[in-house]
Amino acid sequence: MENDTLKKIQAEYSDMLKIAQKDYSEIEELAKDPNVQRYLYLRSLADSRDLIEDGKIGALDRIIRDYGINTIKETNNILCYLYELKNGVLVYLDLEDKAKAYAINKEEKEEFERTHKVVYGDTSILDCMGRYYNTRYKFFEDCINEGQETAVEKLLSREKQRIR
Image (cartoon, rainbow, N blue to C red; front, side):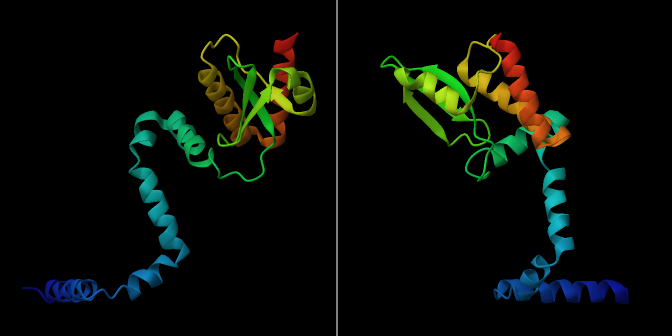
């Protein structure tokens, strides 16, 4: 066998023994390297089926999924009206953090909506969660492409036009 091949075999065998003996020191050292971290991150994106199959839509869906629940600590406090329960309770969800839900009595609606930024989304979409996700999708897309301030202005102006 060639000398290069023997050296490769010896190095691989040595690496296997280290791992078998639970010596992860080299792995831990490499994990600290920003270039290695970046490589692993990009490799995971390259292997991601939703990105390969859906392209831009899959990327945005993944961002919303990964950052949409308890990740964004300070939101713009824009609430999306969802529905009214039979007992007269109105339900709203924060547009950026789906875990932030608000339930208020129907009698408090006017005051609540006056003191909060509330949107209703595309009312031609009958399903309340579909309306929420549609509004959220457009908002995140605008944030990414045009910046957060512009996205907020766009969303709120769209809502004002719908209310007229």
